Length: 182
Image 1 (cartoon, rainbow, N blue to C red):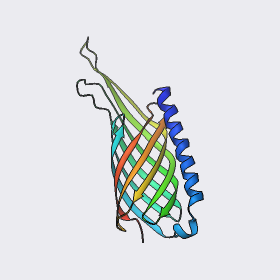
Image 2 (image 1 turned 180 degrees about the horizontal axis):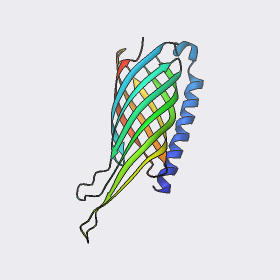
Image 3 (image 1 turned 45 degrees about the vertical axis):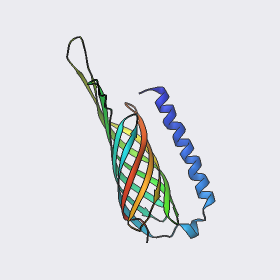
Image 4 (image 1 turned 45 degrees about the horizontal axis):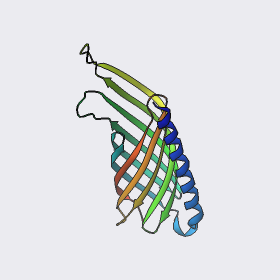
């Protein structure tokens, strides 16, 4: 885990917090955030340094957002058998700001991260596998969802996970299905 990667994830988290605070001041919560319960599922694909896939179940009560999710990252090298992969199961709490045609949220929580690092050894032809985990991680995410209908939405999610073995971050483009709006 590089020092540069951890600093980048922390800086992204601070920027997301600042954006969230600005959104909270900009929107009138009594008009935009009706106190109705919402429940939906998400599936997202994307990445940054690695290819990534994420699944999530989200429950929103008023402005409170609870997320149970799974993220898998795979580092693929086309001309080498070296790779890294991580998986994280996480629970997050966040705040949600609903707008006329979508919502914005910022959340953080706890997760269990596992993974494997494979390093090719050209001299002995014996590959070295290093498994790590489960480690406690700090997942963070910000997402923006546009809802063309009350039950289907499209979104973009910035995410990261700070942990002791292999921190990571990235972006997903998401499909959202469920009760997104009344």
